[in-house]
Length: 379
Image 1 (cartoon, helix red, strand yellow):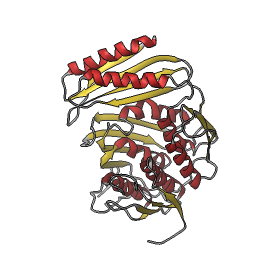
Image 2 (cartoon, rainbow, N blue to C red):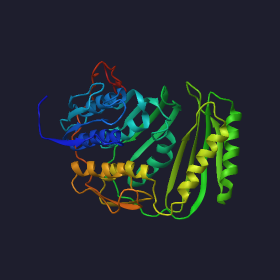
Image 3 (tube, rainbow, N blue to C red):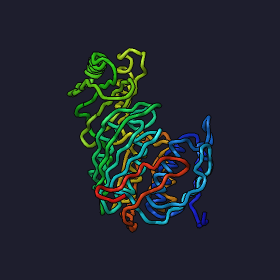
Image 4 (tube, rainbow, N blue to C red):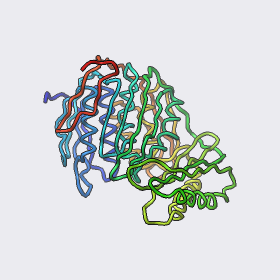
């Protein structure tokens, strides 16, 4: 491939290497700057790129016609060189063995700054223990981004539990020209708690048991509770709980995945305790994971955003350093890792990348292309 000056990223961290890869790809597409990652997942039991990472690279390369080197199973090195031009189709269908929510968070910004509405149909994992669940995106991440001016809606057609997946999400993203900063500095008093106790391919009585135990555990908090028991379509059995704590100035979602064979009450106790433990932190409008997910979208706003969190994580530091490598001075943090802190995100304004006419994006490395032509397009 034609070698140009690239931003070098050390991705050999013990945790957060997936976040670095996803954020680096998004920033490369948005800024047109080439990126070179080394040591990808180097400290994992099975290091290097996995199938879902290669699929993500393929998708991102297709959006901007990037030249790619190193997108192979087990590779710890990747060179990604966009040509600076966004070229999304109006309808995109992506199948992946990985998390659909992480994939969505990666493609969301490039598609938001294209010139046309885009509809996605995503097939893969919608609920997993170590990635945001569909509800985390629908109840928490997207509402905050809408406050900033981003425009998107998502629908869960079918749940897909890790590791097998098979879930289906539909996403509609509208183009945005300008993004406003957010001020999320204090959460205020707890007002109410909402939530879902969901099962798939299990008797609805299991969901009812989840709900009853949650209500009993959360009642001492003394706030209104609206916990709904429900059933979801899915190719395989599963159960999970999502709780939304609504405060005066913010809201925070908590997802807990159940293990089949364990009593529903065990899952309910785990979910309730996770929420109760978090409420003991008096500082921070946002949880550490949500901070990591908001810094990049707010880097393209028209002003300065301030985010506060109960604890600065190593991943937050890594994400800030990565953003600053592409957008110098964009993110600053006022506290050490493990301490409550504030993150200042200086917006650099919306990227102004030219958009090419609709085109097909070919498969890479033996993958079947998941990209479909726009409605009414020929061929």
